[in-house]
Length: 173
Image (cartoon, rainbow, N blue to C red):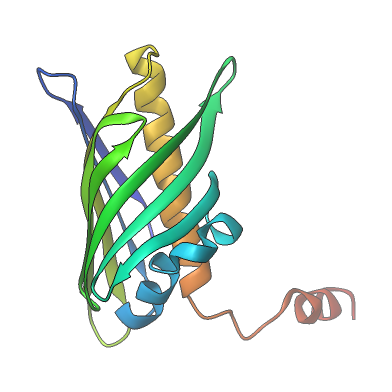
């Protein structure tokens, strides 16, 4: 429960199949609000520097994003323009229209579980349009996806009833 699981595999065309999942103690509607707040993702999500809806046709949106990632000597800033299809509150599908990837297509799936919890799964086929050693791209993909899922969990789960100030007073009082 709550553990982030990441899978990554490359096919013969060097396309990366990557997926990650996490259990979040929250309802799909709350998680949905976090992942579909496209205009504010730069304020809430790691690595996202700019994000905006440039076209809104109800359940289909065009979103432009700029993100920055890297490790040690390898840093890259990349942009995408994706078509997003929403199926509230179950799934969000994205398809690359243009940007710094040859392939960047995937899906969010929110699956309710038990009385109050949701399995969140993100999966995509990814092939960057920039050059970097495969082992670095793989490591960065895994790290960034883990960070993204854990951020969504932190933003979606209700805060505990005991605040840090309460814990301090109990410990010292």
